[in-house]
Image (cartoon, rainbow, N blue to C red):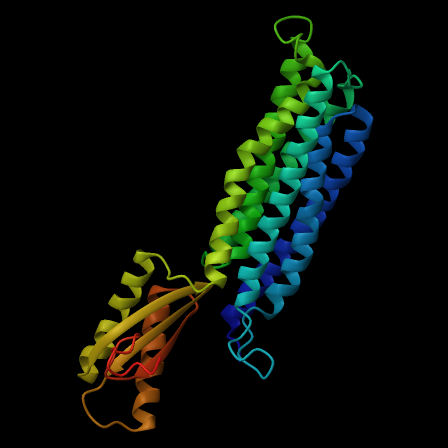
Length: 319
């Protein structure tokens, strides 16, 4: 059964994701509408980012409802992987949108260099759009960041939503500054590039965004591939288990830590140095889980009784 604390965290996370859904839906509708009125690809791209954010928040809310469910017949290792899958494919979808926007921006610049002048921008709708969306992004970031801290900084979903809101606000502010510069200097220093200034802004913003999304994608992919957690997390897990191992009197042969979503999986290869019953092993495993969770939120420990580390010696390796 889940504890009241877990239920409280789930409620806070679910509430934050509902706010994310409606906030992103509002920004998507505003961006697409303002993009059509202003003839601005930069504004249109901003709206498409928000549309992906709405779909992601909708999916994330469904995932968060079952993320803490234990193992069952369908998912023998539980549902923690869903969070890593969500992070990976959300980043991948955003990377796809960025690459699409880069392609369109380069195409527009190429056409302009070959004599095709794009439709002029209508700057009037942009003022209301940038002020409203900038304020919305700031509110969403604050709400997600506060909820993430209140739930113990364990939710990768909330961390990603807060980061997305902050980055969306940065993109919006940068686009607003760039388009304002084009408006005020379109007959001066920026006259040669003013007709394709919108495409240049899209290109620069996409190049700014692509590195962040690549890091998120690689991080999620690494979790799904079972890559070891960071050295600091491994050290924290090792320190947390010292007391239990010292009291039992055995020796630690090896230890591995992997991260999957918000869950840390700690595998302990342990030689008790004596014959032990299943009850003794269970008690020691439960003690290790309790101690590990004081260092790593939502950690789980698999205790393997063995004389060897994770890799069999060559003399015993059957392969």
